[in-house]
Amino acid sequence: MTVAVEVSTQIADYLIQQLYELGVRHVFGVPGDYVLGFFKAVEQSRLQIINTCDEQGAGFAADAYARVRGLGVVAITYGVGGLKIANPTAGAFAEKSPVIVISGAPSMSERGSPLLHHMVRDFDTQRKVFEQLTVAVAALNNPETALAEIDRVLAMALRYRRPVYLELPRDLVNAPGPTYHRPQREEETSDPGALQEALHEAVEWINRAQQPVILAGEELHRFGLQAELWQLIESTNIPVAATILGKSVFPETHPRYMGVYEGAMGIEATRAYVEASDCLILLGALLTDINLGIFTAHLDPNTSIYASSEKLAIRHHVFEGVRLPDFVRGLIQADITRQRPGVTPRPVSPSPFVPQAGQRVTVQRLFQRLNAFLTDETIVIADPGDALFGGTDLFICGQTRFLAPAYYASMGFAVPAALGAQMADPTLRPLVLVGDGAFQMTGMELSTIARYGLNPIVVVLNNRGYGTERPITDGCFNDVLLWNFHRVPEVLGRGRGFEIWTEDELDEALRRAYGHTHEFCILNVHLEVGDYSQALQRMTKSLAERMT
Image (cartoon, rainbow, N blue to C red):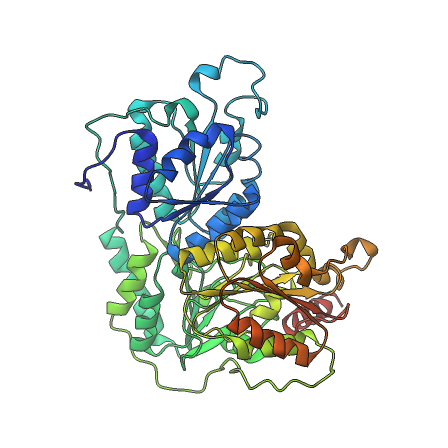
């Protein structure tokens, strides 16, 4: 489909205009000599540049922005910037988050120089790296093809909801493309015959089932299908559970929501009900080890319908050319027998928290207090580790209100992700759950958060080391340097810090943080070494049983 709008044909301006039309309003990144021209073009546009402390932080922020808003952008310089963004890009690829990576590059006229700074081996080395981390790459070296290449790469990001890579030589930023070019937005559609056949077989299978269950995954977030999932549940009354990556894709207050399914890491009643299903409908769920409870899940492919952006299989029958959104919408319109109301598992609703004065804070009591703290405007962002495992038991109020790298599991995600999430939706207030080790990796992005006047509440689980590693093998290599995390605001000259040892201190700190809305707050929560969340305890118990 050709978009009939007035467009600039200068390469950078055209790219910026297409990003704006797709809903992007911010570009995260770090300026460097090869990308300065593009940064200047962004600065003069309707987009806002968000300068971060480090490229990795920019990548995590763009990833979170994409998860909340639908598309994220990070811009960096060549070599030293591009390769630092490789890890966040890999995480976005693994977890299907559409991040547009834009890298500056040496001028075409400079490419005769044998030892140009920031180079590694050849001029195309960085591009070759990103070919392994994205679904599409393009070096915009030719003004005659650059605009069409931009269209192609952006379309791939939207089709697969995974990152893409664009490389722009600095002498072509303002180069004109073909004056006749108009944006091409090709909307991929399902094969009609395959879609109808798949829906017919799926509906027959669902209607014969005695205990159908929907397991909702992260792709429903990525493709914006939360409302469609709600319609499907309302019309069929089929109970639904979520994966860890898919958590908050469906309102957890809904009577048909059963909680997070995560094998032995999850609540036993939810696990038993899902695994006893004679028709398990997996919608947009990645079948990863963590989503499946570290190999403790027992899901039978002989009784499963598996629909994702890249595959549709009903038991062992695979259908080609069927898009996930079309399949989900087709199920809504199909003649599926409405399920009778029955007793299904339910997540535990938050209960009032009564602090015990002088009682040392435990992980379990910390998450109980946080559960009572959440509101409709809270978005929980959890770093890998016990912050994530404990966070899966939180009772999330709204949709797309829980973010975590629960598959790729790169530490240091949460603090910069709070920056991206709040830029994507300023009505949300992030509650960041991060371990002391992870905070030391990217906590510096609090200065970026302070610079732009954002107000997340950062809870540091301070157990003096890498807590989730200790049940596997203990040793001093699991310890980290002790920081006075609550004093970070003194360094930055912004924010408010709280040091917490007891339940009453925790309760009071959260009350004050809730009312302190004009800047960030950081809570340094001291925990005992060897104290773990209930979810991590369930997982380690199950793994121990398997090994005996």
